[in-house]
Length: 172
Image 1 (cartoon, rainbow, N blue to C red):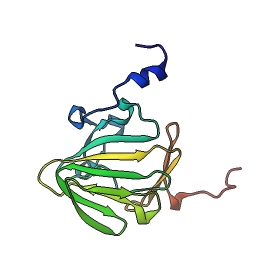
Image 2: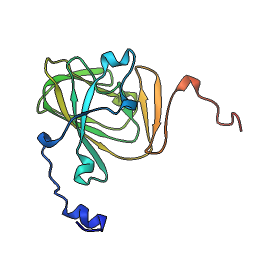
Image 3: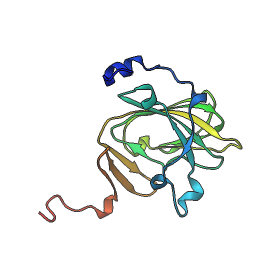
C-alpha cells in the first residue's frame, strides 16, 4: 500500500454493500440512561469513512421495535436524508407524523423547530435506515420536546437550555 494517504484513498474500493456493514451498539458515553433508555435504542454501522467520503456522512441505523434512535431534533446547518431499507415505522417532522416503510426516502433539510424530525419504529421487526448527512461544522441542534439546544463540532460540544442563557456581557 502506498505511503501517500491520497493515493491510498484513490485505490480504495468505493463500493460497500449494506449487508457487509457491522451494526454496533452506541459507545458507552452515547448510550441513553435512566428513563431515556426505555425510549431510545439503536445500533449503527458507519459507511462514509470506510468509503473515503469527505463532505457527506452515511451510516446504517437499526432501530428496535418500539424505540427511537434519537430525540426529536432539528439541525440549523446540516441536512439529513433517510432511506428506509427494511421495516416500518413513523417519522415526525415538525407538527406532522407520517407512516414509513421500506423504499421510502425522507428529506430533513436544515432549519428550526419546523424541520425537527424523529424516526420511531412502530413495527414488530427491526427498522433499518440508511442515514445520509452533510458534515458541516459547527452545527446547532434544537430539541423541541425537552427545550434543549446543542452547539456541536468535532472538538466542542455544549448542550443547554435557552432559559439558562446568560447575557452577552455577563462575566466580562
